[in-house]
Amino acid sequence: MLYPQSNACRQRADLSGFWDFRFDPADEGLGQGWGAGFDPAEIIAVPASWNDQFADWRDYVGVAWYQTTFDLPWGWRGQKIFVRFNAVSYLAEVWLNGERLGEHEGGYLPFAFDITDRVEEAGNMLVVRVDGNLAWDRVPPGNLAGLPGAAFPTVNYPDTSFDFFPYCGIQRPVLLYTEPHDAIADLTAVTEIDGASGVVRVQIARTPGDPLAARVALAGHGAELSTTVALEESAAEVTLTVPDAALWSPDTPNLYDLRVELLRDGAVVDCYTLAIGIRTIAVEGDRLLLNGEPVKLVGFGRHEDFPVVGKGLLPALIVKDYALMRWIGANSFRTSHYPYSEQMMDMADRLGFLVIDETPAVGLFFFEEGLEKRNRLCDQMIREMIDRDKNHPSVIMWSIANEPHTAHLEARQAYYRDLTVVEHPSRPEAVAAFKAQTELVRALDPTRPVTLVSQEGALEEAFAFVDVVCLNRYHGWYTQSGQIDLGLQYLDREIELIHELYPKPFLLSEFGTDTIPGHHAHPPEMFSEEYQAEFLAKQIHLTDEKPFVIGQHIWNMCDFKTSQAVHRMGAYNYKGVFTRDRRPKLAAHRVRALWRGEDGS
Ligand code: GCB
Image (cartoon, rainbow, N blue to C red; front, side):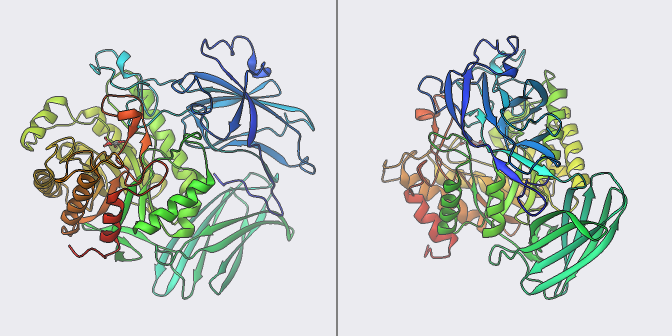
């Protein structure tokens, strides 16, 4: 899915602004025909989550309605016209001028509707019903208290199966855009390295129609290449060889402009420009190789989260967060626990960050209720994520899930006691689902490694299917609480055990401690800044010493909002090395020294 672009052949308009809004706690809007327009009760900012915008609705995760009006921009008639939603959490149903366009499930990926035949010159009414309800057959799941037989007590309010606040609403921009009738439907650029040359293979998909030609041109870093191919069928492939290629890497985030034009009798009927980076990513033995060289990932698990906007797109925050990641010496992050905005991904390409791109499949469980639907949604989200992000050089790995409840409870108890691994510790439904999902990822994109981020340790039988093993581990925090050194011993043993069973590259994808800014203790004590600094430094040293460990991602870059729970003081997760308003804690300075090689210890 190409991001809408304004150029000589395409146009784009942004509907961000102040929209009409109405909460619908009784869910009566559908029955009363609000899709044709409703009496607004509030005005709301788009994009942004709704929860922090109004005094009394913070914890509301039900149904709400948005509407706005727009005129068709001048000169658009005669082309195909679409409305695109970059992200609506969780489920969106959309009407234009009273006609239902369709719906989309899943809070963090884009969807679009063709409105060519429905859009008027002026006074168009766009209405969106947003359903933010938590339910066990959704991804990520919620409302676990009501799940028959699951034996989950309600520990979170709102009742999430995941540890971040379930912000709802139109979180990212809503765009109108045009496409010519003969259009570039999709582009896929794959790169390889051959000696000093870069090889760029471009697949061009087109809308159906008469035979056309496609001109493909690559420019940048002294290169000016172009070639023209016939595009009679629905797709064609072109290969360009770039001599003395300027490779893409964190130190040299070199991008080229790949411009594709569709030609009818020599005249340009559509064009699109994609920024691409020439690089390879591969797993060899237990190493991760970027451009053929071992690469170490240092960085964070993160969240899209900020006061007032919630999970809404905030461009200044993107700039700030990359600046802080640079300052601390990070080169990578995981889009925990859902795909981030397109703007965040574009900046990763430009600034040279390595991204593990994760689907919204966090906190999955494998009870029968809703299983078939959750599996179907996971497939859909994998497809949508890869379709959206496949051309980013920054994306070096796909993550299909975070902390699924794969293992049987009894197996987990034995493991937590003394790292005993019983036979067949995993639920067969989980193993089957992840086998199928890793196969799906590889079919859609054979060029990138695939991972699954687990807390099950050596019990995670799905590690058999992945290229890279990612472990979230909190020894010295949730276990061996208050005992950093004992936690370190457990971590050491556990990493070795997992590596013995699954001799693959290993990433410590989460580790950290909740830390109240300004709270100090000597000797270090849980929740103090000293405890976090020592915990992180020691676990970084430990993992640095293991050749098969390809890096560390601290949990979390910043403090972030969660549901209310006894283990979440003030409804925050305080594991940030920066506060929610992006001030460094003591640990940030310690980690910076380590990651930048300035630590004497
Ligand atoms: C985890 C989860 C993450 C939580 C974190 C924590 O393992 O992946 O979403 O926020 O632990 O702080 O407990």
